[in-house]
Image (cartoon, rainbow, N blue to C red):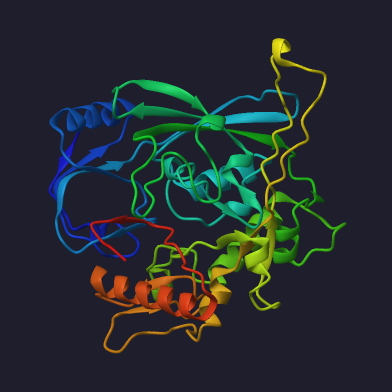
Length: 378
């Protein structure tokens, strides 16, 4: 359980904000991670896990607690649940894009469209990361959790994580606490064994992004290569030479709204239907069954709206800055708030609030932040 000299969280996060913690610990093995967290929880200190630091927006004041750097690594290949599949159990500190590169090289399909997303594997289920129609929920089997309240390690199936659009029971949403306070130790995925053969792309969002015809067939490596190129063009792949990547990626979530509300927005605003959760199993106790099966209850249709489009069409273009501020929108993608060099968390928060106000004033919709906010408010 190596204890390190505290450094500012600005040095450990991609948005480059945050004061130094009271204590900084590095865990390179699962035993170290478990032992450290149990000790911190027993002491009752505030705590924060940091992997890649790519989904954190941290305030300027010192963090009055313990920061644990998760540096566990490793991929274990296991048999899948059916022929033609394989499972991968991955340590939480493993670099996410390194995992995607591994799956593509091994001919395992299911997360190739998530290429280039920064961060570590343990963070992926927390907000159900996704891109171009692929989401973690589609391939996640289970996670190994260390529960804060019990101090026990357990294996939790994906079905119990409350996975939704960029959310789970583990996520610290702005203005609330997680439904379940725990640390992910490992993550298990089930992927399809397809090798290096070309195959059709089922998802419309991915086909559109890659400019593929509905019947076009491409390899996993083709998908990865082109997704990385798209993300680089938007400043969404970390690059020390590109100031647009000094960000937390997409700062605001694409909004999920009712179909009725979506009709109030301009017709040219990009939108995608959201598949409803369908409960296909209805259980009626035999003693209560009267021969009549109740009609299914309909749920209002929902639509995903492009937050980037809303921002641009509220009058805030790429590269926008407030006067004298060192924070600005990315010059490549309006959904990213960037630190243009020495910006404080206060400056970035001021810009985020301004963006929210402009979009709400123009379209009646309050955009929600995607990163986890620590010691900072919008």
